[in-house]
Amino acid sequence: MGRFKVQVDEATLLKAYRIESLEPQEWQDVDHETIDSLAGGMTSSASSYNDAASDPLGLGAIVDVTGMSMEQKAAVLISSKSFDPKAFLSAVHPDATFEELAMGIRNLRHSLDSRSEAIRVLVEENFDRFVSVKFSADGLYGEMKEGLLADSTDFASNALKSQLKLATAKADQVFLPVLENASKADKLRSTLAVFERSKFFFNLPGSLREAVEARRYDAAMRDYKKGKFLLESKPGQLLPTSLATAQSSQSSGSSAVSDSQKRIFDKVWTAVEKVMSEMRET
Image (cartoon, rainbow, N blue to C red; front, side, top):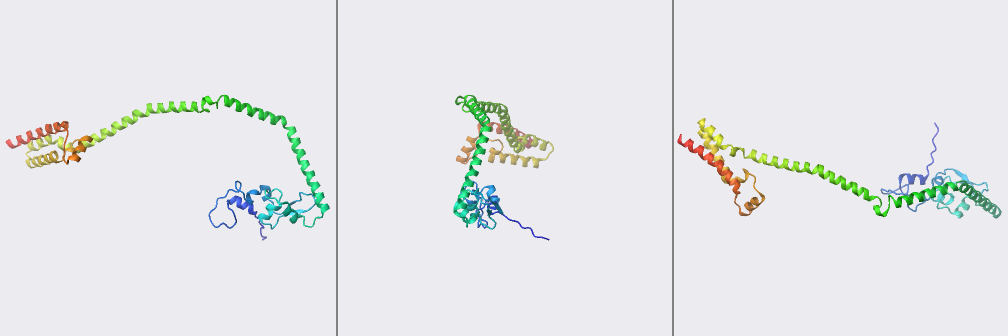
């Protein structure tokens, strides 16, 4: 089986893998199109030369870049941004006579004149199109400056600002009640949680009466002592206290409760004492 002969262009590799050299010593991310580098200075046509190209001087020589380094290719190929006439003559026409070089200059001038003539013909044939495109672009720009991009419209942002304000107002109208209801629901859940924790105390009069009627006096006495302990030592856990009351409790070291809480506790405890009084009389 024959071997594949693969020729790899150095400039193409450097630009494809975004590296500075074929033997990088660290991670690199180089954009050769935006920096001054040999790989970036070689156009795609220049970097694609692998074997040979025609002689731009028209002397029949072959521009053979096989085996040349990237620096040598950049200096020899006329499509490279780093083209060096001296390096080109030294590599391609090292033995050319003065008469041959003079002929090459004439050939090069003729080639340039031909290309200039082709460009002139192209411009003449498409001049009307160029003018039409320029006129249309200028007209469109003028209309945009007077209308959509006028200073009075703040460069077309006024309409957008108005729409954003309307959207904000609509969002407030729709979502503020939802947020308020969510806040109320949170407060309600918090209150229910507090009453769930205080259920024993507020149900104490009823539970004591049931225990007395069932002659379970030990259970009644146990629940009575538990309720008395909660009332005397942990009144703040039975009903939520205000921030001011909580702060005053922390500063004074006591478990002070508000007047409204005290009235509720007194009402519940009066009912408890009434049940216990009836138990003692039986």
